[in-house]
Length: 145
Image (cartoon, rainbow, N blue to C red; front, side):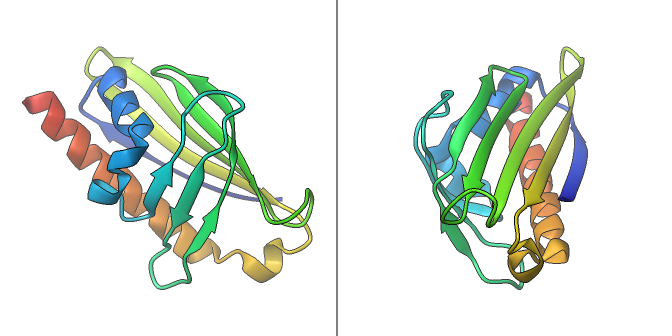
């Protein structure tokens, strides 16, 4: 299994960060990594996600929401074709540090026989970092307003 994990501290409340993460229709306005997202962020729902890692080929997939805990975490599982070919368990965690500061952790666990062929770890990790920075900028702007 391959794991990519990034984190960032954000000067905004968990609620502000959660609201941005779950407003999928706005992703195209601020998110440089997940450039399109549609669906409902409720357990069992299917999303449509388009990722665009920097310098790499974009990909659209339809993951299923595994967990949606308001203000804490959103997780989904995406698959290429069938299980164990190329699976990605994507995790967006919000850890409250105090009432107006959080640590945002973005993690993905990749598994399956085609992971060595399709996963560009460097580009994906850079995409995570760019998304984290954009989330921080957007959340802190909302918190100041």
